[in-house]
Amino acid sequence: MKYLSLTIDSPNGSVQIQGSSGIPTGGLDKLIDILQAFIYLFFTFAIVFALLVLIYSGWLWMTSAGDKQKIASAKQRMTYALVGLIVVFLSFFIVNFVTGFFGINIVTNIP
Image 1 (tube, rainbow, N blue to C red):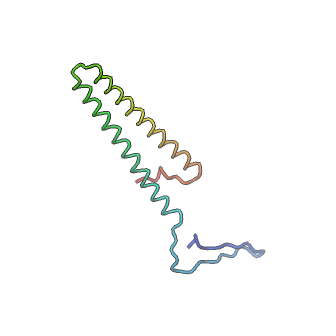
Image 2 (cartoon, one colour):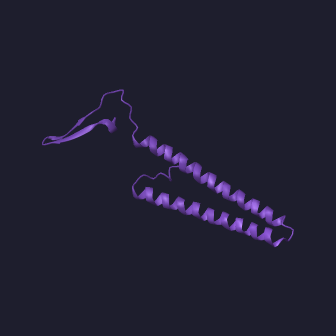
Image 3 (spheres, rainbow, N blue to C red):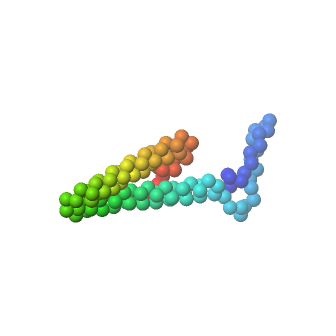
């Protein structure tokens, strides 16, 4: 009930007024749990997708039969997949830094 309690400072010390029983609590804890699950799923999906694109690009390169246009297309896909992986990891570190700065630790509590 700490989310629905009220603390009033008085000359004799602080007085805490509790909310009624039966009123649901939760506050930001549920929102943080939802954000943790979303961030975990997003990072997992992005990493798996980038790795699949890398594998597919390698397959395209191997099956290009020496065609310069197909090789260039496969190289371009590989470059984009690697840049995507770098962006995902940088965004992970940025999210971790910003939430740690505000004291939320949303990324480090991912299961």
